[in-house]
Length: 158
Image (cartoon, rainbow, N blue to C red; front, side, top):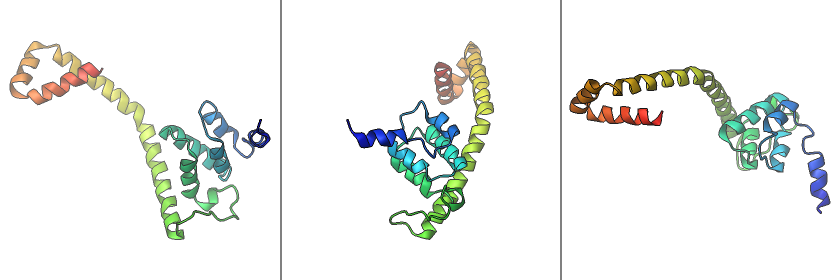
């Protein structure tokens, strides 16, 4: 029995906001990842948990990169500067900027996913009905065989 590990696990979730804990509760998350998450403010912990789930990546290195790409205002201890080995202040600022852009792009994609999925289901149904018409299939086979092949793949995938 490793006493150090037991003590570490006892305080594992200390400093982690309840929303982030709830998101990560059914995932296998390495212990050291929580140590990195503790460095973030509560709102950023939630964002980090969402990003980890979206990427299905819960590693310590991914958590460190999220902390590294976090603006100082979103750190739990704003008075303590971030320490990233081998990175200049300009590189850290660039990472923060890129992280913010990626977060916004991810949210836009997430918002449009439902309507895009519905459009795809409707289009696939329409293509399936077209392929039930022998005249349409014959016309496509004679004039556009590559399109017919792709339509058939779509219909089979559905």
